[in-house]
Image (cartoon, rainbow, N blue to C red; front, side, top):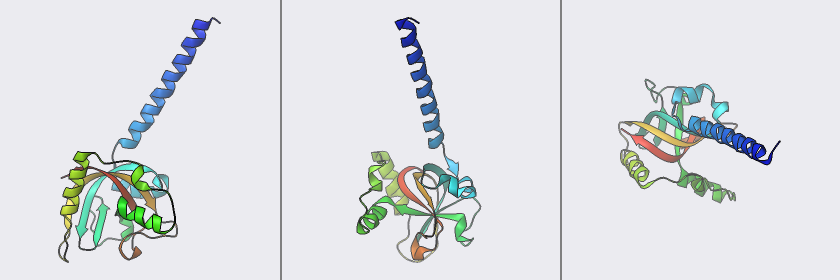
Length: 166
């Protein structure tokens, strides 16, 4: 084989590798539903996911649920939303060096959406606020641990980015 043929073959292989990697990265950014996430929690554990659902906030609660679910339903049907800064502080207190906030950064527009989402959270007891959202973060499912207020939740999303708030 000539040098030119070898070079073409190498280039062709690199193009195919790039196409596969691009395809895989696009799959991870497509939103999945809360139902899809909770139907296979072990599949998504530890992965960064983009999830679409309903943010439910009240005085001591910030969870993500699917359409048609109620917060009063079993805790396994909702996902606790953890702020990355809170998780980072907790991890540092445990002596861990890994920082979640270094994995993905919010754009200025996403920071505004984050503020909008947090502003809808009541500061006193009362009715919960419901917002349609698309969020991106690391999903974790309980493997002996619990998450959120009073450690009552089996799943959490460590929030990296807020992509949409309606």
